[in-house]
Image 1: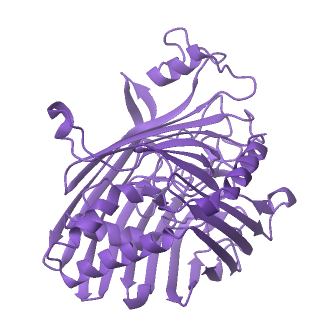
Image 2 (image 1 turned 90 degrees about the horizontal axis):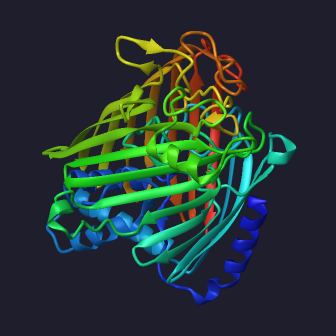
Length: 491
C-alpha cells in the first residue's frame, strides 16, 4: 500500500517538473568525494554547519561556500570549494537523467562503509530527477540481476521533497548515515537498504536567535518515520528516528541520535504506547510494562567530532556511543565507533585522506560484554534489521572491525583508494536473531583497492577486493577475490 501511494505521488509531481527551476535539496550519503571536500573545508573553519548527518542539505553548507569566495584561501581549499560549487550547479539542473550499471564476481556491499551502494553484484538502473523552487524529486528504478524475483526491480533512492520555509519534507526511500565514522555508524548507516518513509529536516543550519541558546552555534535536526518490510517476526513494524546536531565552535560538533522500532501487526499503536516510547518508558517490569504492551525497541546515544587544521592539512578525532538499553533515563549497554582521520596536502590539487577506526558491537562496558544483545530484541525478534541486514554497523552484532583507509585525491575528480579491515565476527559463536549473523562468523582481513575517474558525462569506478578465507559470510564463498566495476552516465 505504501509503495503504491509513493509511486502515485512521484508520478503526479514529475508532471509538474518543467515549471520548476531552483535548487537540489541535498548531497547523497553515497557521495564520498563530496564528503572528503566538506570535511577538509570544515577542519579549516570554512564550513561551519554540522556535517555528520547524511543526506547533507545543500542549504546548510552553501552560504559558507559562497562566502569563502571572498576570503583568502589556500590553493587546495579553493580547489575543494570550486569542486563543491560546480557539483551544486550540476545538481541544480531543472531536469536530469542518469543511467548506471555495475558488475562484480561476488557481493561487494558486505562490510561496506560510507559511500557504498547497496546493490546486487550485477545491476543496472536509470533515474530521472527534477529540482524546482519548492519541489524536487527523483525516480530511480534499478534491476538487480542475481536476486530473488520479487526484488529484481527496486525504487531505492527515489523521493519527492518539498521546501516549506527553512524546513524540508520528504517522502521516499533514501540512504542515511548518522555519525562521524567512515567505515561504520553504529546507529544508522547504508548497510541495509533504505527504509521508505516520511522525513523532516532543516535546510539552513541557522543558529538560535535567543542568547540562551545562540552559543550552540549552527544546528541541524533530522526526523523520520519509516515502514519496515512485511517479512519479519513482527510484520510492518515502523522505524522512527531523530537526530539533533550542534556546532558551538568550528572545530567541535556534537550530536544526539535516537531510533526506535514501534508497532506492527499485533502490537499496540495507540497514542499512549507512542508517548511511552517517546518518554523512554519501555523497560519490562517498570511502570506496568509487559511484553504485551511494550512500546518498542530503541537505540540512542551521542557522538562528537573534533576537527583542527595543521600546517600540512587537517586532523580529526571522533567517537560515537550508542546504547542498546536505558537506565535512569540515559542510554546503557553501549556499542561504539571511534577513530582518527585527517588530510595531508601533497600539492595544490593532490591530497591524501586517511582514517583509522574501530567499531565494537559487543554491548556493555569495556570490561563486561553482553552477547546476543546489540541489534537484537525479545519482541522484535528479527532485530534492528531491514531486508536481512543490520541498519547500523555492517559487522552486525557481537563483532569488531578495525579499519585503515587511504584515499589519494587527484586532479579532475579522480581518486585512488585503499582500505584494509580486520574483523572478528559473532565472537561468542551464537545468534538470537533469525536474520542475524548465523553463518556470519570467523575472523580475518579484508583488502580493497579502487580507482575512480571521470570523463565527459561519465563516472567510473574499478576495483579489487580480497576477503580472508577465515571469514564466513552467508552468500559469499570462503576466501573471496572479487573484481568489480561501476559506471554512471549523466545528462
